[in-house]
Amino acid sequence: MSERVVVITGASSGIGRAAARAFAARGDRLVLVARGEADLHKVAEECGGTPLIVPADVTRRAEVDAVRDAAVERFGRIDIWSDSAAVMAYGRFEDLPAEVFDRVIATDLIGTANVARVALRQFRHQQRGTLILCSSLLAHITAPYMSAYVTAKWGLRGLARTLAQEVRDAPGVRVCTVSLGSVDTPIYTSAANYAGFVGRPPPPVDRPERVAAAILRQADRPGREISVGPANRLIELGFTTMPWVYDALVTPLMRRFGLSREPISRHPGNVFGPAARSEGGPLRPTWRQVTAVATGGVAAAVGAAALHQAFRRATR
Image (cartoon, rainbow, N blue to C red; front, side, top):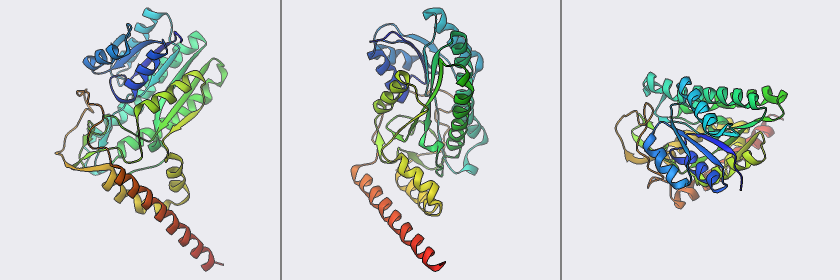
């Protein structure tokens, strides 16, 4: 058991909710932050004890400052700040309203920067503290119909790496990331959607509790990055070493497994404001679909290897 002071932004659902419950089980004192106050109270009840609830929007710098002030006033310090606040939008780039694209960037990248700025200033003042940023497999690869989210996460990856370099002069301060693949959370069904079909996590899909466990590992023994997802490294390898194969396959695979067959009208989802929490849902791909993806991936890899060998023989 421990009594660290942990601030969690994005605590009202999904990964933030799972992280809050995991830290609470360890005896840590919590500051729960998200836009939706009602859902924060639900999470606080699940955690037990007396977590501090601070409704805030990470895109508003003054509200992030207020989170820090409230935490320090209640507990005297902040030991860990875990940020998983994010929104998502589906649709071709040219079909996304500009204001939706901009808002996803504002939340997922600028919001993260706002959190990091406040957290690191507090940690330098204390001479210790750990900032944990939730990144994504989509910070290492690209996927169609998700341009805003991909753009934000690639930016977050660069920001996190830069911050880790800059705090090397402060031995007690650490910046870590947790890079996750598909996770069964509400972000897919609550996303803005201009693709015509409800989004869903493509297989293989992890539970949010597994990501929360990785966040706790970073809190206990800070490292640069933990990747959570059984296929993450393989997908990254294909993206990097076989870009022609990856680009040919990613769009049909995204249409088949990243979008459900449930039609939906164009809407901004929770991009501009909180939506009622709904954990998980019926749109998660089946094991049959997972098997199809695995089989297709193996076939694609074998085909790519054969093409590569044929090309080498032809150019000798």
